[in-house]
Length: 557
Image (cartoon, rainbow, N blue to C red; front, side, top):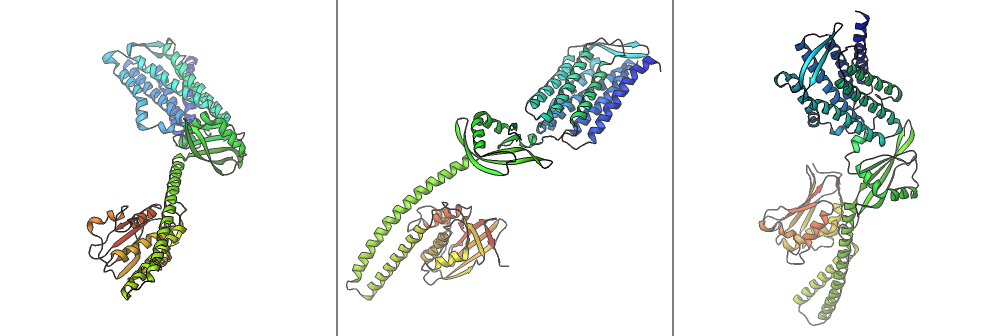
C-alpha cells in the first residue's frame, strides 16, 4: 500500500476503532438510563466509518448501491439513538415508548426504502456514477426531489436535539453544563459535516468529510467525558420521576437558589415566588433544613389553594448540598373539612334547641304526673303512672347522654371496647327480660365516639319491635375484608321489603332517627350496617368493619 492509500484507509480505521472503544467504555461503565442508547449511537458511528471506507474500495455499481443503502441504515440508527440518548439524559425518557420510537424512525425508514427502490422511480437519485481516483472510488449522485425527505429528517433530528439540550442547559446546575455543552457541540459538528458531505464535490477519496465529522463527534464527546465525567455523570433522575407529578416539587441549592421545578412547582414560582420566599425566610429555612411540614395558602390561577409544604435535605458525601420542597395541594380536603365544620355547627345548634325544648316538655310531664299521683287511683292506674314516670326518667337519661356526646364525625376517632359499650347500653335499656349473650370480648374498634349509640339503637330496636324475642346473641366474625359484628335476635324479624328502608331518615313508629343515625355514625369511619335476618325468625344486623380499624385479641376458633 502506498502513502496515498494509507492516508485514505487509516483515518477511517482509526475513527472506527476509536468510536468502538468509546461505545465499549460507555456500555461497561456506570449503569444509567441513557447508557444503552449512547453505546448504540457510537457503535453505529464505528460501523458507519467502516462502511464509508468500503465505499471507497468498491468499483461495482450494484454492490456500491447496496453499501450506500447500508450507510443510510446505519446513519438512521445513529440519529434515532442520538435523540433517544439526549432525551433520556435530560430527563425526558418517559416519552421514549415503542410507539414514539417508531414515529421518529418512520422518515428514516421511508428514506431507506426510497434509496433501495431508486431504480424503479429515480426520485431519490437522478443519476449515479462512481468516480475513480488512484485505485479508489467515490459515489457521486445527482439528488432527486425525494432526497429532501432524508436531508430534512437529518436536519430536523439535529435541530430538535439541540433545542432540547439548550432548554436543559438553561435550567441545570453548573456541573451538568459541561456535559450538555459537549453534547451540543458534538451534534452541531455532525450536522455541519453532514451538510458539507451532501453539498461538496466528491472527486477525491482522500477527503472523507462524513467520516471525519463522525470521528470529530466521538472525539468531542470523549474529551467532554474526560473533563466532566460525562458517561458516569450522576443523572438527575428526579426529572423523570417527578416530571408528571401533581405535587409541586422545587429543588434549591445550598444558597437556596432554584435548581429545578416541575410543572406545578413552576406555576407556583411564577405566581407566588415573592410570597413563597417570604414565608421561607419567616420560617428561617436554611441548609440543612431538616424535615419540616407546615400548611400555607396561595392564590393560584385566581383561586385560593391550600398546601402542605414539606422540606428535606439533599446530601452528597455526607454534606447537605440542597433542599427539596414538596407542596401537596390539600384544597379539596380543606373545603371538605370546612363543610363538615359548618354541618356539625348546624347539627349541634339544632340538637341544643331540641334538647332544651324536650327537657321543658319532660319537666311539664313530670309535673302533671306528680299531680296525678296525688289523686285517687286504682292499682292498675298507679302501675301505669309508675311506668310513665320510668319512661320519662329514661328519656331524660337519654337527653343527658346525648348532651355529653359530640356530634357524629365532630371529634377524632378513638379505640373503644365493644363489650364495654354493650354493657353500658344494657344498663340503660329495659330489655324486658330478653337474655343477651355476648361473644365480642377482646374486640376494639377505632370508631366514632358515638359508637355506644349504635348498640343502644340495636338493643332498643329488639326490645320495641322484637315482640316475641327472648334472646339476643352478639358475636364477631373474621372476614376476608375485615370484621363483622352481628347483633341477632329470635324475634319476628324484618319483612323482606323493609330491610333497606328501615335505615331511612323518618322511617318507623317513633322518631324514625334511630337506625338512620346508627348508619351515619358508623359511616364516619367507613363502617356499614345491613339487616340480613330471615323474616319470621328474627332480626340480624351486621356491622362490617374494614381491616385496619379493629383489633381482636382472642378471636374464637
